[in-house]
Length: 475
Ligand code: UDX
Ligand code: UDX
Ligand code: ADP
Picture 1 (cartoon, rainbow, N blue to C red):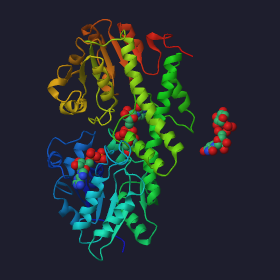
Picture 2: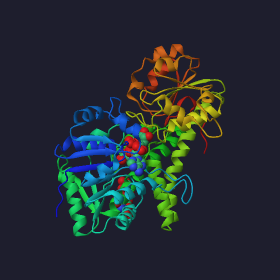
Picture 3: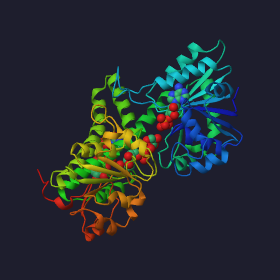
Picture 4: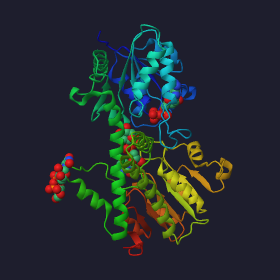
């Protein structure tokens, strides 16, 4: 009865499915892994020299295993038929219309591929839910499978949420804090979980592979992201107090983080968190709480999101206020557009919000990011009904591929992403080419404020009171 997995199929070749399956192929040479996707361009890119996502270390592993035991294909049915284990790793965006719009997860892609599995499977499958989904989705998947499968065919459902962070995906996959596997409390459910435990046991210490019930597993993913996001909102809330009082948020974070009950990680103040997960998962959690008639709990978690919106707005307003309350026709250069360093991903990036705010203030914006493709920037800044196309955007926004060129003639540099590269630029050289007074706004606390001031910059850093100390004092 115990299944020993030989063929894996993963539906969804995105930021989660791509790296996760690549590492399984790397660590399990005896398993053939096929990643499928409805998007033929994405599959073509995975099969080319120019992978569709940037992730440190990923390219080497893909190239070493592609064509051996790692395949990228658009033939979804074939991959489903051949596999013993199928991962569902499709996107689950927030609904934009209908019931729960703005909060609930849109499960149409999860449902579509579940139905596909039921339609084409000819033998027993273990179906692993990998996308982050609200609680009890696995149960819906089970109903769909059982209602549509050929008579006598059995499916086992597992939930195994992925905890990798972008920019460190390969490191996180190689050495995870834990691997979580949720299963139904039946003999078949435990056997299915065991099959997945065996896959991970090829490189992950058994003590780190945790098995739980299906619902605990699903909720744990939402909970982990909610806790992480809450830490950032907590330190960002402190950053506002620091700016108003003269305390330094880095000093506060350091002092607080030394308490082993709190810990030092994930306490970096910023212009706000971005990324595909935090906003979406917190919204899902808030919606779940409302559905469960727990309005106080919903309000608690919603406040984490509200604080994040406040932080982005507050930072943008500080830029305007510091530059004599007007940005009209000034040149503002954004350093960084990705939602964090080491990725080209811009989903929910705070830089987008900030750029739109500056546009409203009639600034000319120049953007430099080491990894974000130009077309993505144009896509992100287009606003239906406001600026619909790239031609209109180009009148006030430009993209450069070199930091020095981007800063030439700028009145202000605004650090939006914590790229290492920004720490090591020649700021003397940048200063000479800028309009005066030359401003630097450090939204990520990565620059040496004292050194910049010595050069002549006016510097405003998140979580520090800066040159306007005193002005903002209000009790
Ligand atoms: C707290 C801080 O821990 C300490 O650093 C500070 O100097 C004073 O305030 P104290 O109130 O003495 O110390 O005890 P603590 O262990 O923090 O517990 C506070 C309350 O939280 C208790 O009612 C405790 O039962 C409760 N608690 C604590 C929980 O409900 N769950 C937990 O996981 C931990
Ligand atoms: C997150 C979770 O970390 C990961 O476990 C989960 O699987 C997916 O969501 P990710 O969004 O890829 O991963 O990156 P993460 O490193 O968590 O950063 C999210 C956002 O928070 C970024 O915008 C980052 O810049 C910001 N951040 C992070 C801070 O502002 N301060 C911090 O201390 C940490
Ligand atoms: P994530 O960050 O969760 O990995 P992505 O958007 O990067 O999300 O990737 C999800 C992938 O799933 C996309 O490439 C999308 O084309 C693919 N996808 C969505 N629906 C289906 C489906 N029904 N069948 C196959 N692939 C799908």
